Image 1 (cartoon, each protein chain N blue to C red):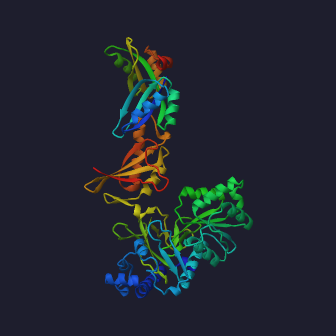
Image 2: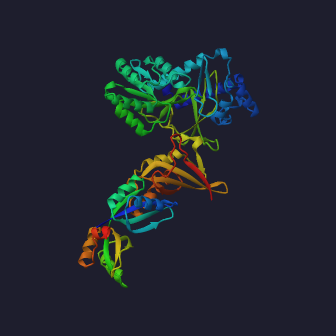
Image 3: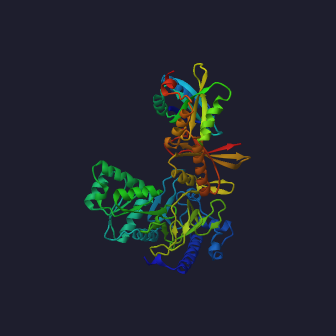
Length: 428
Length: 142
């Protein structure tokens, strides 16, 4: 796709125009943004440069939730062809509407993502994302069709039948969540198949984070090339960024979605390469326009040219959610960073607790409580202390903060089947 | 050499009792013990009459335990008795990680349990200097 290879200047011209269009459009058509602009004494024509753009207030998940169901609409409902909604795990769902032009732009974007991942019109692609309010199924479906691939709209579930059709149809591309790909391989083995015999060529994975270990597992089990892609309903759905075959970060369709990275605490813009919260502006949305949407996802932008030759900036894999962030002595700490460090030590289990030691309401110290594994326990204080030290050093270089490390007995930390409570505050 | 059971203990109330209960219920007799601790955790070291069974029982009850080899030796129950023996090891550059005394029916000698860095070298040094080494049978079943 030509637009993946624009020069930096070309991108910045296009983004300048695109943002101007997005601002004018929102101001003129969206009662929600008209109010936001007026309340901030802002006019679209005052925004001329990227620095000016930072004056536009962020839009948050809460704004979209409060606008349920049609508060974000900028067109009469009759112009909306389709409605999607995010699963509302907390509160009301977030609704997204699409005009004909929106659906067209979305399909085009997803087609670009699929093409980057190596999919061609000769491929037979099985979509194992759910078809429904969730944007994954329909999003990939229309993008793959746009590219000219043969689409098998299986939707989710019924694993055995998925496998048998996969074999009969000679499916070459699998679209699913990474965990479903792993699960399917397990079932295939239980049924006596070798997943490698299915002949899958490419996997397009999204909808949840995928660790390196998961990716390796999928690739070695299925013998396919696993690529990741990213998107969210609030902005459009899948098809915002995706990996090329270099699999070194996800190329953002920058001529359609304007990316920024901000400090989740101060809201200040951060430079390329710096880790922070991803903020996205879809520049051409008609039905439910959104400006500077705070995704809550923590990543960084990679501006260095990719080996594939595409000039779009890439985003790194999501390393956490800004909602999980803790600030300790001015340092932003994400529990996921601690998980990564602990995963490197076989002497301790991945279960941990963070104890925030507070003094007069401020977090003074961080204590990381970790369970020893039987491999980690020795009779020697010297060795246990050395282990404690090694973990502390690694945490310090990852977090830029030296926490206290406390070794615990196995199974002494709380276990829950759902999301474990890992963070506790103690007033000292 | 004697098989000692070492247990990791969080500094939390009830941990020691639990270990003692597990062993008691399994009919295992504790013959000697020592506890060392830091502000965060402790290590309980025990000599029991059935070390292998003790290890299995503790692990079954999810107590973190491991077996370590230690030397049991007789030390004259007189001033300077221990110093003299330690000097043999010192002379050979063998480091002692820890030691503690073992409870036994009164005799003229004390029994000391000792963990050293080079256990085979240490045994040789002690034997060469005629330090009585106490065997497993006597320690476990006395």
